[in-house]
Image (cartoon, rainbow, N blue to C red; front, side):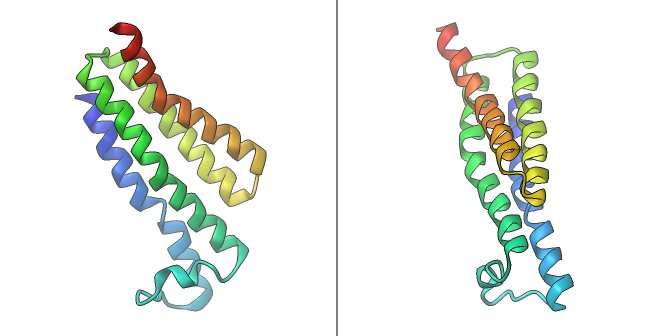
Amino acid sequence: MAAYAFILAAAVFTILTKFPAVIYVVKRKGYYNNYNPRLQFQEDKTVERLYAAHSNTIESFVVFSVGMLVAAQYGLSQAQIVICGSTYFAARFAYMFCYIKNLAWTRSSFWFLGWLASLAPIAMAMLKL
C-alpha cells in the first residue's frame, strides 16, 4: 500500500513544483499568461531555473513510479518501500532548493540520490527473484 501512496504523492508533487515558477512570474509581471504559459518561463534566468526544476520533477516521476510499482508487484517489505520513497522525496526537496539557489554540483548530487532511490526497488526485486 505504501508504494501506491508514494506514487500518488509524487504525482501531486509534480504539480506543486510548478508553484514557485508561477508565483515568481505573477509577482514580477502582475499576471500569469495562461494562453502561452511556457513563453513566460523563458524571460529570465531565475524563472528558467524554477521551471527547469519543475520539468525535471515530471521526468523523475516516471522512473520513481516504475520503481514503486515493481516494489509492490514483487512484494518488497513496507520498510524497504518507505526507505526508498522517503529518500526519493528528501532528495527531490533538496534538489529543488539547490536548483532555486543555483547550486549546480550539489543539485546534481541530490538528483543522483533521487535516481538511486528510484532504481533501488527494481534492483531489490531482481535480487529477490
